[in-house]
Length: 144
Image 1 (tube, one colour):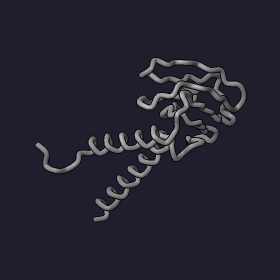
Image 2: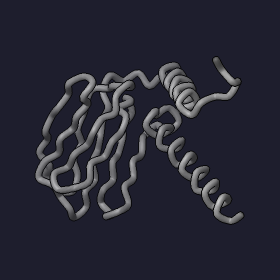
Image 3: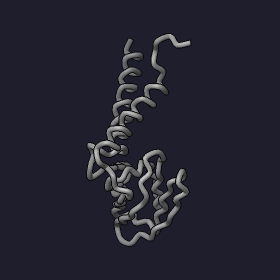
Image 4: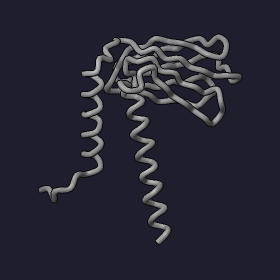
């Protein structure tokens, strides 16, 4: 029985479906995602990229302060970017070109060459907005 209220999980599911529909219809049709990792002075020896739902696990050698790899597009699974000795980064391999910037310690930045059609970028924007709403609600609760 429903009380007429939308649950948090139902709301997130609806948002994801809308975003996925927009992206699929917007022409982000590449079957591969190009991911560039920028490491600055940290320079890991290797990079492991995983997309568990399609059993994709591949290690790449890193030469210099960055690496560019092409990986399969997979809209329904979170991919992992594991540079050796550095923080792991999770993203959606959405067919756009993504740049993962780990060159400044403590300032992770993930960008897309097509931010308007990138599921990863829209997901990150939603989580930033949601975190801000939660922060405001907590601040209001403690101000009273």
